[in-house]
Amino acid sequence: MIRFHNTLSGKVESFEPIEPGSVKLYTCGPTVYDFPHIGNWRAYVFEDLLKRFLIFSGYKVTHVMNLTDVDDKTIRGAGAKGLSLEEYTRPFIEAFDRERDILNILPANHYPRATEHIREMVEIIQILLDKTFAYRKDGSIYFAIAKFPAYGRLSKVNLEDLRPGSRGDADEYEKDSVHDFALWKAPKEGEPVWETEIGPGRPGWHVECSAMSSKYLGRTFDIHCGGVDNIFPHHENEIAQSEAANGVKFVNYWLHCHHLVVDGEKMAKSKGNFYTLADILAKGYDPYDVRYLLISTHYRKMLNFTFDALEQAKAARSRLGNFFGALKDVTRESDGIQDIRPLVEAARAGFVAGLEDDLNISESLASLFSLVKIIYPLVTQGAISRRQTQPVLEFFFSIDEVLAIKPSPVRSASGKITGFSSVEGKATAGEEQYADVEGRLESEIQKKIEARQKARSEKDFNLADEIREELLSQGILLEDTKDGVRWKKIIPPGT
RNA sequence: GGCGCGGUACCCAAGCGGCUAAGGGAGAGGUCUGCAAAACCUUUAUUCGUCGGUUCGAGUCCGACCCGCGCCUCCA
Image (cartoon, rainbow, N blue to C red; front, top):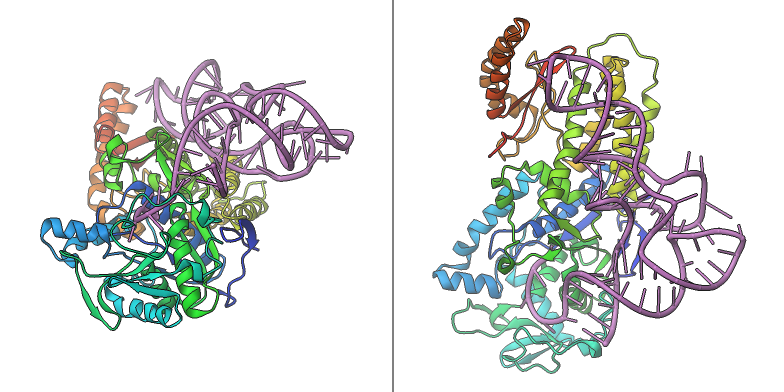
């Protein structure tokens, strides 16, 4: 039984989808006015873990993520550059797609854009006007929070306790109540305008999620995710709009991930602790190590991003990769005494139990590493047969469908691929692609390795070390084992 | 001011009423190795922010307090 912490109740609840066996998932996507930063990716990677685990658990997941391409920031940015919204947002959307793939995040089924769903938004606003949840004022349309008594249920906010808004458009528009929010904004100088049945203007932010989620997932759906900062007011407003318009419950489970901070402080360009994924990859880090780091802290806990933590993530993932490679190198034919299957089953049970408990990734990783701790010595001592490694390898492959962290590449001296990973900061699709890209270089590397082996046998260790250094500088790390030389591709030091 | 999160070893981080407080990283010593690397063994919390309380028994529940952090109208 899967359990999730539901922001709505503030408790961990058993998860039961509306339709058995299938899950309708909506996750708040990026506002495409800039390149996504590492904090954004924390949220999207969490959502990917959630989605992958649901799929792993046998659910069919329909996932929708919106792209906010019309709001104050995109309008301002496009205006400053004299571009259309479409032109202005395109590179940011492309960057989002590219980096999502690099982080091995599964694409959603739909990426609806706000600008392409004006009609759906207008429909909702019209209904809200008809039902008198919304009112007009100076060409704009606002949601009257006073008409929706359940307002504040998600965020546990009392409107009386709120500080009067010091930001936003509070001064520019006249509203009945300061807390009322804009569904539709009157035309303004320099802003895009849509001519619609409810009048000219452009949509407010919140209404797009209500419109697009119901279009693709239905009026009531299972899970809605976002960052904690979205709880109020964004998600609160979505609930108000959708439930007022549709008269049915909007979302059953709200899952919110906590923020990422850098060196203990909120990321801000002014503080100089602001990182995009590209910034980090440019320092020579493997995107899968970044993914591991982002995934390995429980989603409801604040994640403190530091380069030290990234190094730790890299080391941990590297251990998994080394183990994975060692497993694939086992050649022994006769079975060892140790019965492997019960160990694997225990690890699998622990792994699943952890994730079922509100995505307790720590417990899952602990059970994974505990298995490694038992099996690895057996592998290095040659106490396990090739056949016996199969359940372990299968376990690795199956849980990597959830973690998607791809163990590091390790190759035996024969040149056969025993693992796979990213190369030069680019994610690879899998073993075949990796083999294709690297196949050409392999004979070269083999020759060097053979030359070094010759030097070693002649006790010419200076030459041997020289060759090892040379390969290392090319990103090839050599390891001498009992069974011969093994090499793995790493990101070369000093890049 | 309101709402909320967190303080567990050198670092990260589970555990949330009861066996000797998971797991990862780092450090130290050792085994193996020409040397490295990898791996393995040993080692690093009589103690879980502080002080009280409840209990046969508490990081785990209750109260107070001390720190750190987030949100409070368009930031994941």
